Length: 178
Image: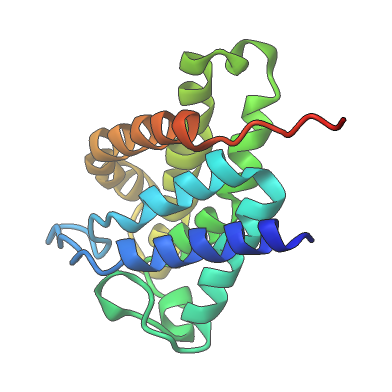
């Protein structure tokens, strides 16, 4: 990796951590809060792409796993990864690859298509993975776990739209070689 790419990965990892400083919003009927941190995961996917985005998210999750309180609400450690939110964390790690695999479909190269591809990879699939894990870890019926995730869809949809709009602004054009 070039120094520029390492710096980009480090900056996005730091941004994900900073977004975790916003307090989570507990819902009461589901042990998974609403967080702003997944906006950083979405940005990692749409700005850095599959390889560097996965590296940034993986570095962030590694810090959380070894005990740095980088998750929203100061959460950290292996217990978080096996608790009710563990599936969402796994989904976060897969998000850059998922989003970018959807973006390889030709009609999703259009700006609106990018938002649809981002939504499929960063919202829908992450929520399904999170629901499956939630159903297993909290001994909840699968349909109940899936239905409880409907509360996340409006906010996560706004986050992926925002992430795509930001990505359009921060993409640096490749320098022409002379």
